[in-house]
Length: 122
Length: 107
Image (cartoon, rainbow over all chains, first blue to last red; front, side):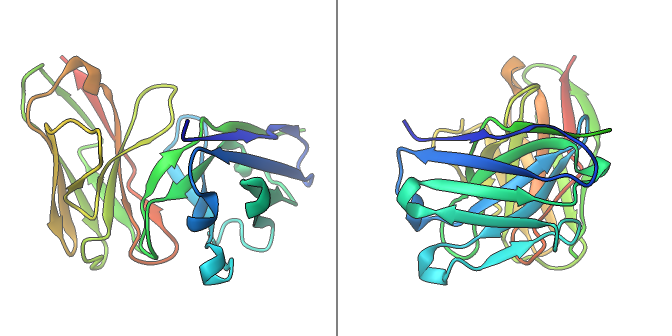
């Protein structure tokens, strides 16, 4: 089955760290750009960042709101995507989705995981 | 950053109605626009990519049009299962940005 499954969410104090994982199956993970998108409770969607594929040197892009605090990485041998979140703020509270880039350099998100909730609170 | 503005923010329509949602970009994004459907408590689902291309498996009552800065998503005959929030998203340039969403309610 083609799917993405996130894990690693939970409750963390402001200033703390958390690492999210996304396990991919049913498709050639290494071919695709992969993204993280988040959604604060009751709010809209916010793009967090992207990692390109090996053919594009695994380069990354980030939203300004997380740049310097969050790091996206991937392990193609494990079909896995990661989001390392440091210096967490209360405004980072959200459901975090991993999403697959549809194709090419200009890619919409054609496959989404079920999401994992991150709560930043003291 | 490219701002994406959707209208209306909420709409209420009857089963069988034709529904149109508009998305405006603050600068030209060519046709690099996607539409997503998010049902309550679920993950978003891709409906339309490259402004007017229907994603595989999506019912043909959904269609997209536009280019540059003005885009529309049309549901030709609203069904009860279309209760959801719809988001547009530009992927022309970074940071990738979403519209604020349009909540579709069934009368």
